[in-house]
Image (cartoon, rainbow, N blue to C red; front, side, top):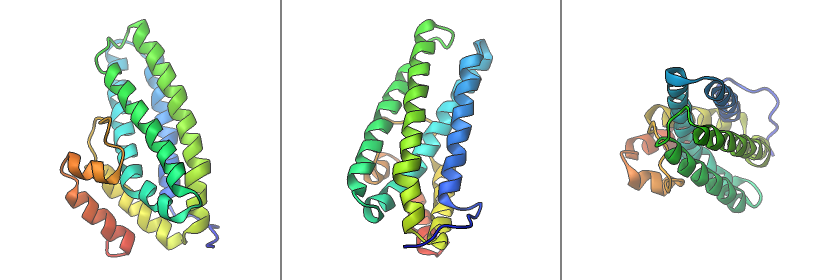
Length: 186
């Protein structure tokens, strides 16, 4: 077992946890805003959720399935939560941002996403940090950044796996770059 003492800024766990903090902040900004400011904040939140989930689905979940105890079950739970969040986001896109219904659904989504993030951090990220070397975590961090750079800007319900992402759009180049980064070629 690799000990994970000193983390690099490129460490995949640090990278994704920092994104969780950004997402939490974007939820707060969106819920406290109104009108055009709320719409702008919601669009940024939606974009951040989409790119974050793509990085997890392409880079972290496949590795967690192979490397952590009961990885398949852990990842399947996270994928089900991600699917539900994407479904709610698609509903929110159709609502008036200043409506009570929007605020109610967004509040429920925030609670679900924050719970999801906590489970990822304790059940998946921490265990990967224990199982993988610092070098592997850094390569995965580079791969996650590449996945984020090419990710869709909207969530797509039903696209919660590496294979679904591949067949859903132009992800082949990103997968190649991500795999190269993980394998140390990038």
